[in-house]
Image 1 (spheres, rainbow, N blue to C red):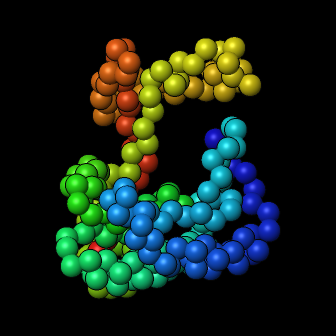
Image 2: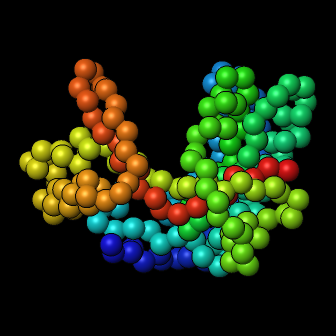
Length: 211
């Protein structure tokens, strides 16, 4: 895996407050229509998923701390508004470790509460001095889950002539072979009358926290 160098990192870190400010306000209309809301890390370049054969290195140091503190601010702001609803709600911070750029604040009401409560596979990870959760307030209570990346078998068997770069097709097929031969969780699904397989590849931890 090749990592793409991040240029102008200081300037990008300076954009984190703009992302935080954009999500502090709780948009009740979205929650009422869809029964959920999310605040993902929409900060360039960590929100960019379009790099081929390369991967953006995860935020480190100040960038990581500022992102996690931003999620805490959003959580606190949303909690104030959700309390005004006077009905049950789900509000959690999902801290991904080490894939911290996937971290987010998630809230849900009505039928979506159960969906999010049962979304991840439980784990028994122990917090330590290096855990990302140490950046956040001590009054957060954390549950550990497994961070899994999903791969659809049909996506990894895309016709070779449909790839812009033939090497990408080889990489997908090598990955599929690894998934088939490895001891990975998988699930058979049916789409449009055809069976397909989802493979779940562990990537790390998810700390699910609430006050």
